[in-house]
Length: 531
Image (cartoon, rainbow, N blue to C red; front, top):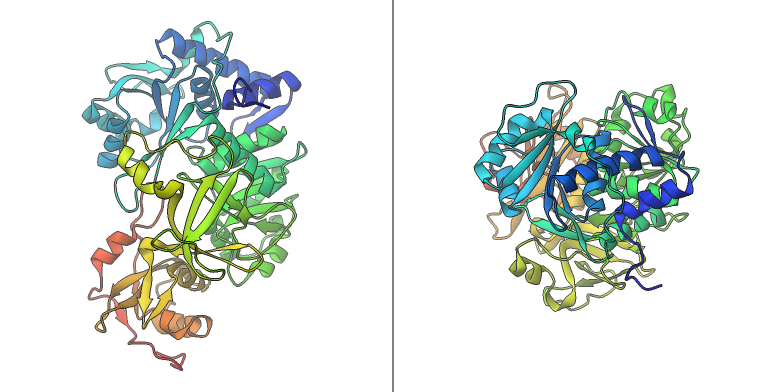
């Protein structure tokens, strides 16, 4: 079937689902209620009609700072329904970073939840890019800001009667990167990009109409929005959305809402693993959880304790989901094989393929039209730089085994070279956080007196009084090559992070070795477990 006029667009998913089964429960927001396909579509059409009456045109940009509530989905789908472009914003953003994002998409309109007005309004005013604002309030006073209008007023217009007939290749969203190595870039996603991510997620998770998909991740991230909500909508499954992750409530919510599948970040799995066992962690219907990264070293124990299977994939805002473990298969530690619609290659610094088993940068490109990103918003030079030789350069180092499975190694910018050996910061971090007292770990290079690198780790621990560096070194030594055991270890209260909670290793590298850093001395082959 030709892509042109195929109806492959995001708002078309909800329209088709409502036509098939208007009473199907499509999404439940914990603390609110359950919405049917027809009920959600009616709300979307009312808000879309209001946006049109406000003068929003095809291609206009609407930024959104809204938490995990139904108004996020209503707004996102309403913007899509009139051919405008949505820009979901991380609700933790503030200050210069937020101002940069708003300025880069100028001019734009803004839909915000009143809880975020104190951080958002000053940035919007400084950027000078926001022309109109609609505020979601729960019977609270509207923030006293020029141009602010109640969100509910949008629903007072006549509902949209005919949605925009978007083509699959048209821009639907600008999604900002985390900005771990520089200013955040706006990645342009077409409808086809978004739909491929949803389809790839189902390829990994095996969603069916019988599933109940639970997510406690923020809807402004691609994980909750595309791999959970839109993927479930494609398969006519139901989604349950929690406001946020809660270690004390997670298993009760999974049980009470009869979830069958869920998506988790690696940190969530680590936190759950460290909790004392409770009956609810086995009293559930979960058949599968996506956990990225996989719990290294205790995969079977994790699955046995919680009574479910886990799977993995590789994805990002820049690339979508080019790798995943096909549903029904298992390969512990692997992020999978190419998903439908993608070609991948591991390459050296000259973009030449590396041999099987060797580490190389992951390069990706779509094998189907418009599956890949459309580029970086207003950054043509960055777009070209990342797509040189007709391959997208992810900046991630992976290796491939003889059977075609891929394994994540590290970020290229986090590469560490010790005694002529390459050290994967990711692999060292996985060992460190498997220690019972280590909550978080960041591993990075600091200068060595020998001219290469020394391995340094900054960690956060659960009990500083009980934890000792010596115990951690004893724990890590038999689990790592001698040259990968961190020489320098520093315990911090918190690790520096971006607004999307990615660790800022550049900040740690700049901080370097301090007076509070423990130096266990250089590591040598055959070094004893005791420092």
